[in-house]
Image (cartoon, rainbow, N blue to C red; front, side):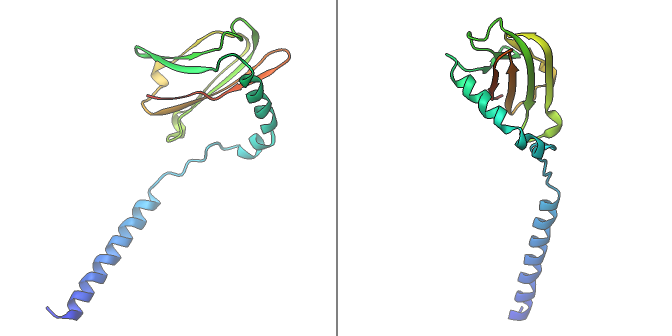
Length: 144
């Protein structure tokens, strides 16, 4: 074997390796965080106000796992208040696992999330609770 053959083999291995990397890179999914990100960005001031109102409470909203169930726990300050609840359960790595729960006339209480929709991994609960005079926004996270 001479140096020309060794160079050809090395270049061949390099080209095959780069082709493999390119093929694998093109097979990856690139989900957007949300499909209507522009409209959500325009309305982000209400989220900022909701976070400020939520931080003024004595406790934060929490996601807790008990046995095989996942619960969203509300702070004591909000328990029993009536309002509109919008909950988006966001799974960062797979957009098809995301789901929403909404209720127009809802009394604030702990929520048991449907176990059949919860997969192992990181979950972010984006919760907007609107009462008669204030908006509260929480983003508790949990890794299952």
